[in-house]
Length: 168
Image (cartoon, one colour):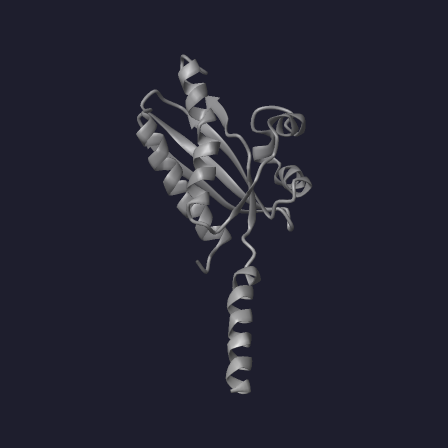
């Protein structure tokens, strides 16, 4: 009887501590920048669309229950960014920003719009500890409807999750 109780206690302890053994990767997602090179650039609608990408990506990654989202205040991002594409092109500096926030991973992105008909979600995944660019993605968006943006962001979230959680 004592052996059965001891075994049950050990099993309960293992079950309760099992969830704590896996710490979800901590990921920070910077606000996406709009790189609009059309003949009518930076319209209010396109700025709103671009501003929606970061929260949509955070939401899509949260749904997988496999990451912890770390927020970097917009003012902190602005202070670290010397201009359009600066953090996108200088991974070491972007990683430093992610490290200051306590993130393991950092996503730096741009919404590149070369045409009125299509645009690209461009995202780079940086390992904050090594300060290396681990992956770079370009998701084509055909059209400018909210559903097109959401579909592209969900596809991007799956790709990012595959990089930071390869076993899941």
